[in-house]
Image (cartoon, rainbow, N blue to C red; front, side):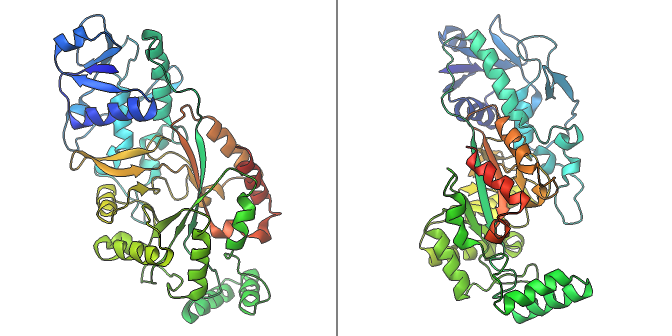
Length: 431
């Protein structure tokens, strides 16, 4: 066990140190505020406080982990041994910056808790993030800091053994906001699509819609029968998130009473793990809607569903994550940006979210998302998945997960010769 001395054991200190050492590095940790206990400890130990006690392994602490609530933070970026850093605390020593406080700042989404500008859709604008402004959004800096720190600790304490046998995982999520693009839609939605295509002179979309409605070709989103074949030659077993809610003023959906839709869901549930893709209405009015959507999908599949993803991305983290817990979800797959590559929380390692508005760790594990289909489609079709391999191979810790989110339409068998999908097939075989 590694013993940490600090002048004050706070919930923030306990949270981030346990996550770094136990979840990311696989090493037990203890805390003490007693100098005599720290001095008497014969195993590996470090002090995390304002000033060094003696000649021990020492990391100078920033004030963030000893504060409460949200306060204005002064961020000055620097670099150290090729890594972007902030919260620099000392000029010399094994670690000249407080990466524990910096990791907490990113993982708790501190910058989203302070007053900030939102985009037109009401979301936190990634361009306002520290990571985007200083060009490290696509790097899992928390994992990189911890990996670098582990090599330093190993040099000080030979008994500090780390897990070297496993490697980071790659993960695919499939979200199904619409099981069918044209078939099984309400007449009003079908007419709306028809006249929209005419208005925009989109003859291809018009021809596709009519061909699907007259049963001359399959629906572009109805790819479910092909999924087993698609993943049969890879080790991936994607998690599938279905939007199973009635249409509302916020969002058009397939009727939850449609027999073809219900059949597709039950068919998929026999082979793949499921999660709930929460509707926009459930995000706006979680008390009335979120549990209902979960219960409806559980009743259909006869399975307990504990994973959730928002169809409209995260907006107010503390409020939305509290609603997830009230609805008895234990895993969230929403921590990413809708149309931009990168690590919104600065890490690729799943973590329990710390609610800084209430100062405690929530019983909700957050699974970071690196890219959604919208972000991938902004890239060159030929090189998109080659770049994903590069990003995934750059993960420094075995605790990391490299997660991509695709839609059911992306996997349609009619697109199997598409350059984009060929790249995807190569990607999932390269495990």
